[in-house]
Length: 370
Image (cartoon, rainbow, N blue to C red; front, side, top):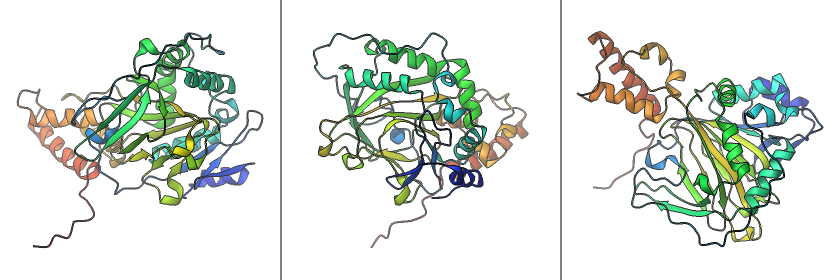
């Protein structure tokens, strides 16, 4: 595993280190103040992102069919949640202060995400909130099975609660918290991505045989992805591991755990998948609450696109929808034109750089016998 200088300093200062499926993870309790970060370094040369193989909340953008219907379950009466979020709560109010009060840890998170690494934060939220969310996930009977397979090889099978009418009060409060302007500003500053658009999140539950094949999440205006793992008594042998494809095998597995927040910048190179849940997991649940913060920027001909996307680092932050908007500006005869013509040609050249950098040609070619 590769560490930057700041991470090495943190490694030397950490009081406890655990090895979780090849990923070196800093751990912390609510009473011990030290870093709680682990990372995997993203590299180029991964599977090209596509609309189809981008992952999602059971909503297909192309393919053979839609997700399957809801399980028939007898509704249980809901008990009052053991914890409530007040209106206006922002994510900073419920993050573990033992982690996020440390400026060095914040800088480490910023560096990792800006470098295209996956950032794994143990004991991320205050325990009262984490335990209450676990109880809600464990207790809900509103799961629907979402399953589909596509002609590019992507497919998924897992349980979710997508309808807001099925959300418990705490789920609704959590969504509201992830959506506040203060939360989005905090995440924009933390990740270096525009998170000022819509925020979406929902519960997920993987049971035996459930999986999610390789994808990037790079679709629409998705900017930053989060997975809040809330599984208790989970073991690596149960499967259901988040596999970060840019990493070497020894470091790629991020096994389900409790109160672990995973963050990554969504790009065509953020390839990952969830391994199939093993029959050994019976009696245990792989539970999570996951979603995305979206960008609000839609490129317009009057925007200084050439300046905003002058460097490869800037171009890497383009969402799928923003790339499509630039294509439309250049190719759609009915779209507003970039003026003057000299600017139009500059953006044409810029588009060429975008496509070469974000969707490179394969490094291999098949051997074909005539």
